[in-house]
Image (cartoon, rainbow, N blue to C red; front, side, top):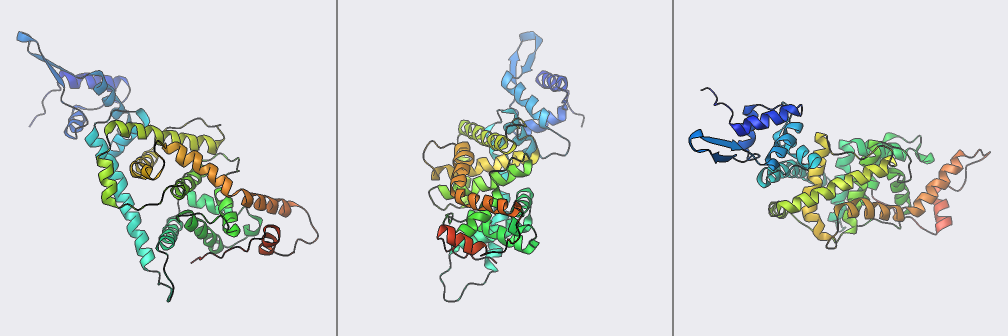
Length: 370
């Protein structure tokens, strides 16, 4: 069956998007309308001259933003998220929430299922009371280390900057990293465990002057994890999170989007020393990450004081508190690096643990590493 000719409203959108260098077809516009991204055009009756259809300016702006982010073969949800996060596009409520839901919840459930399988495979200690929160954090850490990724690879490299780990085996580095991530994902950070805090300080490397995306990924991971430790502890389930997201008003989602984008830009500014501008989440992976952060924040913000912003909690308060918590560890690591760089006839001495105990009085609680 031959397709009908474009209406006046569609023709206008096709001309506008083509002028931007992002032409879209009549068929594509119809698909967007079927997905409720575009409303029905306004119809004006002209008497004997018939009718004329047109769109208001806000719909024209929306179509141009969608066209800017559309690519052959790209998921419609990704096009929606890119337009939403990069172009401030006024995406209608239903397709926006569907894109957030289909991006966030499947990924969250896959991660939780994988974590649960790891935790269930670990035999319990006979005669001991199992710490379910620690076990879950350890399973999440094990999964993160196993799956790797930019942040994990960078934290491995950061740990090797410690003189005593420069020639350590991959197994030992991963054991240290597993301990860091386990405690970073636990309900509380064990600040009195100086061995752990030294590993944590080295892994996140807040004092580095390097400019890289990898550094940004590490800080995002650490800041988000520690923000949960700073919040009021509580438990939610998938149904509660789904219900919260579905009932969040559209205007509120736009406001929360601004908070998430501001947080990404602030973290990038810190990670690059302000030398590489402020990026937009203009890749599919970055927009998906922003979508997951937004969906998570609709529920997680309830655990923070009323009026808390995502940027302040995750990428100002959290990183500043991590800097405070690791201040002593930084001093010890910095002293260790200076000592390693100083020529000496005999650097053999009392050892790392004895040095910490002598200079701080700490005994260093042993952590469990699988």
